[in-house]
Length: 371
Image (cartoon, rainbow, N blue to C red; front, top):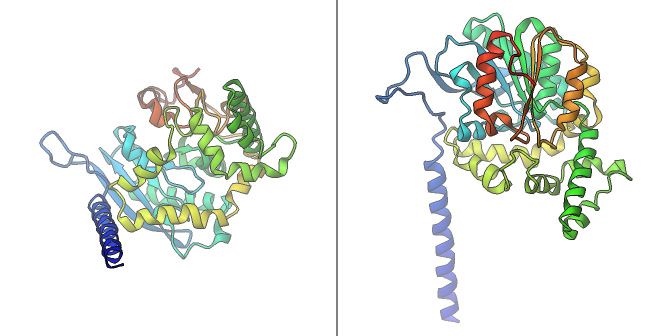
């Protein structure tokens, strides 16, 4: 009995020690400051910005990272997807280089990441409020940088917000870059479901087939929301290379861990990201809005240049539906760009091509590199 107690005490001491070590490491890698831009001598670039700021937007405090190698560059507002699940940790990891061309604001939308707080009520989490927030952030950036107009770049769940903001106030924007533009997401989910079922049938993977058939979307539309918000959907999309990135096979190693290792967040801010993701956002109506609204029908015309980026292997937001919308969408200048080696995130998967398009087309109001 005495030996058992000693072993139990030693075990608990080891567990406690491991937890202390883990927390120490997490605190050490969480200084909460975005990486500065330095010259070859290790000095900050004279006109550069790299900061985390909090601003009152829509009556609540919201956070954002603002970064640029030259603060005189055009201003870009980046709207992440989710909805309201920020992906600055992927920007930090993959470094696509937007700051070479723009002063970029990575705004973390109401209720998510830096912008999660008890001040944010579930009732305020809807696309109309998010559009109003985006316009308010736009005005903040215009005033701060002394610019009449800015650029918009939105990804996935951020595209309905950017689309409506640009439609309501085109005079505020030079142009709109849409990466994985959402249109009719309910239809997109059915296409993805059929594709995944076919892929697993070709692989003769009966276990995965049986799992998918727990959500018979073709026969039962009422299960669409359950499928869309299920862990199974994300897991299978990444297994098949049609999820966040073509080469991203694991949510744990390629999403979960990068959040914890991103040095731009403090440790409490990292906890807020996951608290919001798993305990707050599921209480909102945002996912149901995405599945019940056809954003293509809502915005038939934009009075600014538009540039659509879509990955050939993107079934998270179907490329074909985005392209159909693009062909009907009226705009003064428009270009559609297919990324042959990407799934849902060309900015991270083929960033060199993105940079070429920005440099040669977007900044010059041209579409020479379009499909």
